Image (cartoon, rainbow, N blue to C red; front, side, top):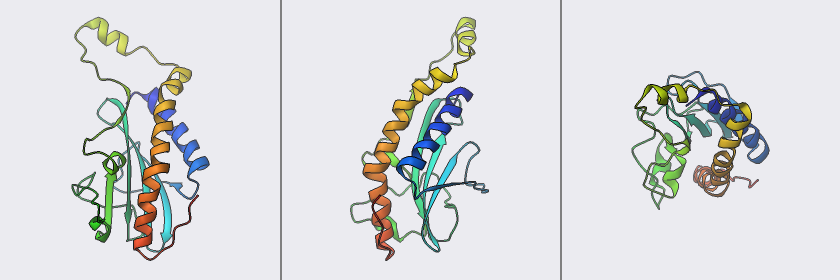
Length: 179
């Protein structure tokens, strides 16, 4: 993801998380399971059960991002061998039995891996294309481009992600408070 988009994305997402989902505190994670540039937000349900929301900007040069949700029953960032987990959410929530779990948020409503795309990838076919791709984007333009996507991601977290994590918390014997 371009630096300008990444900066705007992290700033706006963090501000909205503080405002809309304040029980999730941004934490610095020192783990090989958390990629550089990702931002992790933790809700300590009860020790040792922690729920997580992760903002994951694309590291491969695409102008897009993912939002992941999950948990660890081991008081740490989820240490899963594959991110996202291969096991998708099930109607009977069989995945709640896992000690650690991390999935992309859209897997709660679709089987298609759908990132939030700021700008579609375009193959550079000429020197002019390359030069145009290197023109800086203003902070204002970057913020304008990412705002509707962050708004949608936060809305989806509120309407689907939070209820899913609260259901998980309830399965652990913890009554989750709606916010």
